[in-house]
Image (cartoon, rainbow, N blue to C red):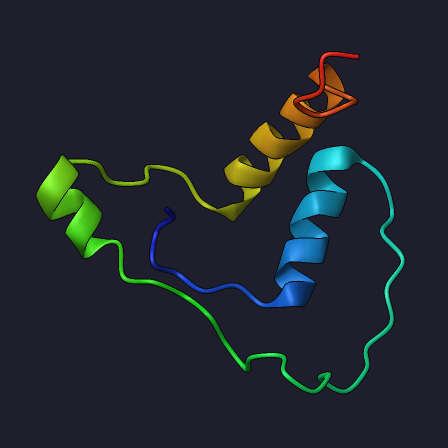
Amino acid sequence: LGTGTGYSVLQMVRAMEKASGREIKYKIMARREGDVASCYANPALAEHELGWKAAFGLDKMCEDLWRWQLQNPTGFSKN
């Protein structure tokens, strides 16, 4: 679940660069066959049914993701 605000791939790259302090190399290319033009969801049902609403934006989400990755370099594995 998120905020209902959509972000571009380039916005995601920039936010992860900021969170990680690392440059992320990328190429701008045409969309591949089968790629969707946009994908987002309305979080209103979660707020209504669960009383839950996302409180943070993209930068904070990426900071949390990067912190988790640093603390869990092998992901969920037990190795």
